[in-house]
Length: 144
Image 1 (tube, helix red, strand yellow):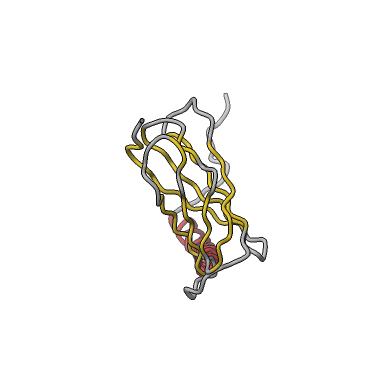
Image 2: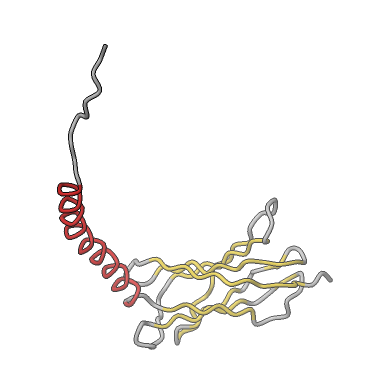
């Protein structure tokens, strides 16, 4: 018959110091990861999206405003606006926005293709190549 002997005897005198050493080693690493993420977000530009035309099926004007972390306008970016219904089964509407200067970008060929609730996403490539994205909900687009 096999005897039942533990592979290793770990008592509270061994486990507690081991856990303390692991915590001392791991907690500072978690803090560094969080700090890097915060620093990256602080240097990002801010994006504002506004539907400036009537919210009804058909052509729509969508404006995207880009500002640096310091609040100054960001020109020279590439801005694409994507519209999706909030339910599956519909092809997205994608429109490139034109740079108007002063950090303002406007779509010229965006169309709400169906009444209902939409999700509008601005996909931005800044002049330095960084990519940003911002999404808003547009509710109650009316059918004609």
